[in-house]
Amino acid sequence: MSVHNKVIIITGGSTGIGATAALFYAKAGAKVLIVARRLEKLEQCKKDIEKDDPQAQVSSMVGDISEPETGKLAVKTALETYGKIGVVLANQFSIMGGPVGRTYRGHMSNVNTGMY
Image (cartoon, rainbow, N blue to C red; front, side, top):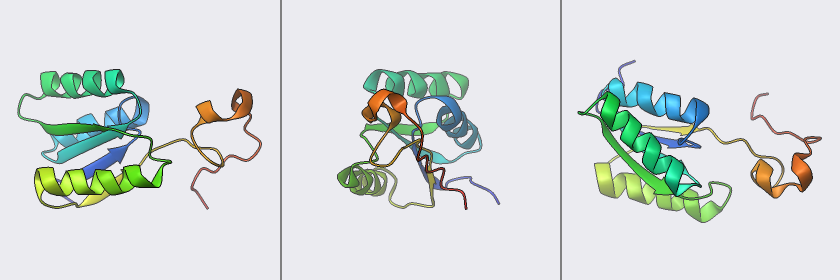
């Protein structure tokens, strides 16, 4: 499957697997919207992608995807920026009710990996 000109929203996209996926898809010609909570990390990730591939079409949006409004805003932003959506890569580590940082000392007794 070619991703050239496909619009891809990547949540948790500013570091780790999300940032790597954003770079991979941008280099393959996709139009990428990165969504993450930390503005500084988003800006750095976007700069790194554009440095690696000056032709990359990448935009970013600050938001906590565990909040329902963030997902709606990401869709709206992608549609306004690129005119369509092709793929949503939901890459966010969460534990019952939000990101790890919201849990008491990061206890992981009920981890939801999204894999069944």
